[in-house]
Length: 427
Ligand code: BJ8
Image 1 (cartoon, rainbow, N blue to C red):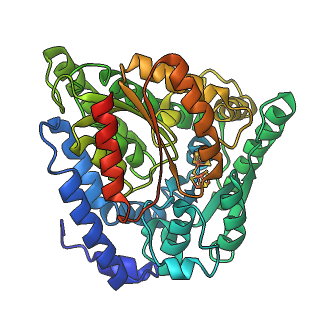
Image 2 (cartoon, helix red, strand yellow; image 1 turned 30 degrees about the vertical axis):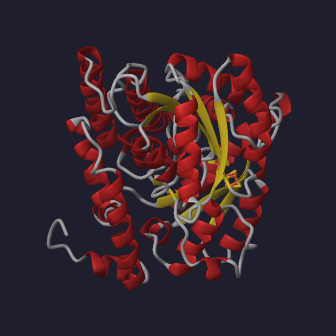
């Protein structure tokens, strides 16, 4: 433990199962050790990420909970999806944290609420709540869900029995009508968060919140651009964790750290210093999001000698590729700008969703990928469905492609490793 602070008391006060949570921290700590700390030639600035990982359930929670008792942030708002705009939450004096689970926990308990054959991300967050092992879930004052895939939509009916929830209705097609509907949803969220915090969103607070999120996205864009170099200056694992951190860490502090990573990676790229050897097989990842501690696929790819150079997913480019205009004059105009920016997120719930395929091919070219790995969490029908056209798009672009379906268990890891090794040899 980093200091004398009694985190066990804090977790207990949050209503957590402290003993089970100790077990979880032990497992995740070991994973971090074997996956991240064994990497060779990491940029020195990634030490910030080690601190984020070490403090994820301790220092960061303490910071938010202590802050809340002093009114800054006024409330902690949990979310499960990229569609819940952090700018709105920040502008009303709250902090938004991601609650998606990247590991299986208490599956038998979860199956009392959702079917056995449910996507592991959904089953994971149900299990984390029922097992009381996630301090982000336990400290959240309100959870904002969204009607996206069928699994989440119905799981929220169950989750709302366990936590106070507010649900946003995300359109599944893009046209003039749904653009207005979605703008209305974002305005309604603003009113709901204002009610929660008792703080009005002002032009000043919303403009500042837009800039805060944009600065983080600009830093991530800088870091991403350095990955076009060969040798690539930073691993996919470290970049994945950087975006995962964006859903949990303090925004301004993280932005500073990402800019330092970008500075170092730009320098490394110019000097030909890599986290992987020059000529390592370069993979573009696309597919379902990867929540902490779901690092296994990137770990397998990179331990097999490949390197992930980009991620077209919600824990990747979709989070940072688009900014919100910073010149909105009124709160209403800025909320509309936010809504329009978020409606452009290329989630597979949308039909048609050609923009995602265009993004994948564009990124594969810009980042000089040798191959595309498209992975879906098991039972995620919408991403499985999109894999057919994604393969076709990759074929037409002349880029080798592989589709995988995976879950959080380690059972299929041997087979997964064999398939990835064969793909890396083939490309
Ligand atoms: S905007 S990708 S974060 S919905 S993997 S739970 S889709 S069955 S996570 Fe997502 Fe928002 Fe879309 Fe992004 Fe359902 Fe599929 Fe599970 Fe998923």
